[in-house]
Length: 372
Image 1 (cartoon, rainbow, N blue to C red):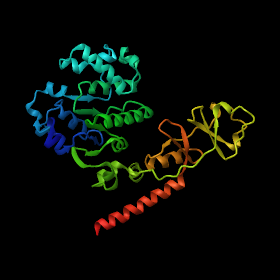
Image 2: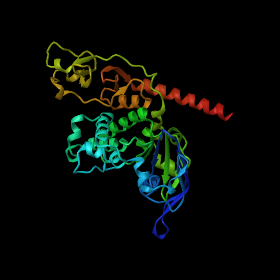
Image 3: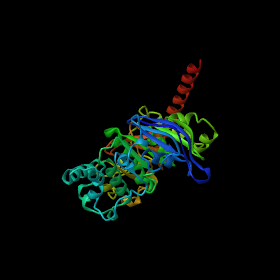
Image 4: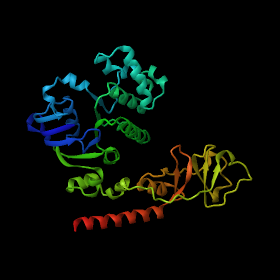
């Protein structure tokens, strides 16, 4: 779909921003460019739509040399999402989303209808379409930025650190939203980040750039975590890459145990007793709210008195999610929920670790047999 052929970008004084880059980006996948500041990842992204012109080499999109296309037409054929969303502050949300379709000659009525549809696609309420960017949160602005990039239904979506300016909770939500959109739309997405965790979560393939614009390794995220090609990649990925690899190990075999629960609305009822060391408080819909330790049962009377819980584990998620839920909970029990967030039970760290060890031994046997 997108091919770099010996592409370099040099600035004044011969400084190389990108050095002899050759890389194929597959159609319908998310490819993440990751690396430290100044390594050429954003420059490489911007050369795809000719916001930056290469010094040498060729970039092909669907087999066509983009150097022979008009830059303005090329840019309108691709979606582009940047870190600050880049919304026009004097235009409403709907008008911002309509920008590219209108530039492409789409009638105002059709463009407005498409913009309204995209609000729902990116998880925004229809009423927000009449607001201005300054009236939205950072996360909402980024969703509008994604909607605007999708408005002309481009086959290619370029995303330059789009989630780095929001808080961690919103960032996780936006990452999940992007993966959901990709399952539905199957765009060819090139995504820039400096965060190796974000790269391994989102990428079908990850390109690790080194200082000086050199492509150090280009592979599936699991391979980069398992077998970094050199000391630079190993150092950039980090010493805890073994823990990150758990994201690619299926957690479907984790045993889910029942847990005693109590409704928050009944905490003040003197007839309610806590029998186990830890009891999980839930709302009236069965969603977790916090923990009640047996030693504190006489003082816990409302949601404000609960001991905060850890992360949640959705059944079937990775072993990393299961282990994190168990280790981050004050009870040592990882709360397991269904797709609607209702409690199914808990997982135990010791049992998750046993599955991790079994998976490690299985990999060792597989690698040995392959080598033989």
